Image 1 (cartoon, rainbow over the protein chains, first blue to last red):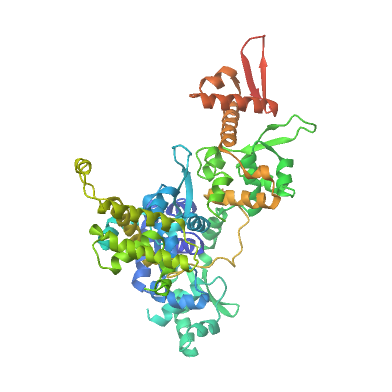
Image 2 (tube, rainbow over the protein chains, first blue to last red; image 1 turned 90 degrees about the vertical axis):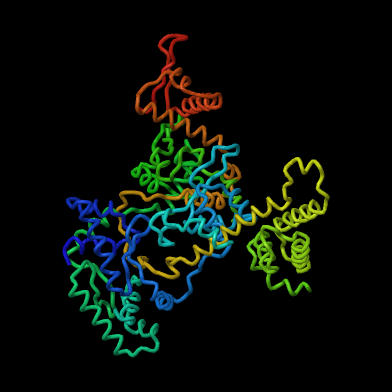
Length: 173
Length: 173
Length: 239
C-alpha cells in the first residue's frame, strides 16, 4: 500500500470520533486535498471489496472504521450485556426533532400528543439532541436540534441523508 | 473473506485490550480451537502482506490491531491536536462563572466548596473566561466573566440564551 | 370486553394518538372517514380500563377523550345554515390532520430504528482503556446541556435557594456588561453618550445604564469628567 493511504488509514483508526478530511489535511500539511480524498475513497472501496469484518464508512462529516452488519450479533455476544436501545417513545421524539429542527418542545408535544420532558432529557443526556438556541417569540422558548453524535449513531453523512418524510407518508397510507 | 475470519477480525477490532483466543472461542462456541488459530494467523499474514496503516499483532497473550511503526509520527501529530472536552470540575467552575457573572473567585469557591485555582487557570488559558476587573473591597479581588469564545463553544448567540434552571427543571429529573 | 382484555395493550401505546391509530387499524376503517361513535366508544372503554386498574392515566388521554366526545356531538347535530355558510367543515378534519401527521412521524421513528445503529448493529473501536492525551489544545463543541447539568449538580449540593433561579434579566445584564468591556478593550475609551446612543430600544437602554452602574460599582470601569457637566469618559480600571 502506498504511504499516503497507510497514514490516512492509521489516523482514522486511532480516533474515537469520525475524522474529518480537514483534520487529516491538518496533519498532512503538504498533501493536496484532492490526493487525500482520492486515497480515502480508495480505502473505502478496498474494504468494501474485501468484505471482511470491518469497513471504512463516511459518517457525520468524517470517516470511521466500523464492523460490518453481518457480524453484529457476534460482537454483541462478545460485549455481553445488550446495549440499551432507544424506547419507541424516545425514538418518536427524536424523529420529530430530526425532521422538524430547529423545533420547540411544544411543537414536538403537539405532534406526539404527549408530554415529552422525559424523552427530551434522555436524548439530551445521550447527546443525540441539543439546545440550539431560543426562538424569538414571547417567552423565548428553547429550540432543539440534532447533534453530530446523532449522525454518527445512525450512520448518516449529513442530515440530508435522512430518508424524506414523504417516503414515510406513503408508507402510512 | 470467509465468515469466520470476518467475525474474528470484528471481535479483535472492537476491543480496547488484546483479545485472547479463549475469549474468541467463548463467542464462537461450535468452532474448533484449531480453526480459530488458523484464521487468526491468516489475518495476521494478510495485514502483513498488505502493509497498510494498521496491523494485527499478538501482544500480551492476545491479539490486537495496532498502527504500523512507519506511520507512528503522523499518529502522534494527530493526537497532539486532540480535541478535548472539559473535566467535570472545570465544567462546574465554568457553570458558576457563567450563571453568576460578574463573580469573584471566593464566591465560586463558596458555591463549589473547593479550591478552584486549577480549574480557573485552565479556563483562563482556554479563553473561556476572563478577568473583567477588580472589586473595590480590601485585597481588591479579581472579578471573572465569560468570553466570546465561551458563547462560540456552546453555540450561544448571547448569554440570555442560556437555559434558566427553571426551564431545565421542566425537563424533569 | 372486560377490563382484562385491554390490560395487556395498555403499555404498548405511546400516547392517546397512538391508541386512536390502533383502534382505527383494528376496526379496519378509513382514517379519512372515521366512524366517530364507534371509535369513541372503544376509546372510552380503554380509558375506563386504565382507570379501573388504577393506572396513572396521563392527562393527554382525557383531553383526547373530550375532543372525541365533542366531535361526536357535533356530528349528531343537523347541519345549520350557519355551518353551510362556513363551508360545511367536517368536525373530524382537525383530528384527522393531527392523526396523519403523527402517523408519519411514527413511521419515521420506525425508519430510524431500522437503521444500522452504532452500538447495536454496528460497532466502533472501544477507546476506553487507552490512555488519554494530556494536551488539550482545542475544544470540541460542548452542549449547553452539560453546562446546565453541572450547574444544577452543584446547586443541589449546596441547596442554596438564590442559586436556583437565574432569570433572563440577569443574563441580559451580563450580556451588556460583556459587550461594554469588549468595546472598551477594543477602543480604550468611550464616552457615556457613545454607550447610550447605540441602544436601539428602551429595554436595552436600561440594561446599558444598569451595566455601567454595576461596572463602576465593581471598579471594572472608571468614569471621569474633565469639567463639571462636561463629557463623561469611561475606560477600563485595570490598565
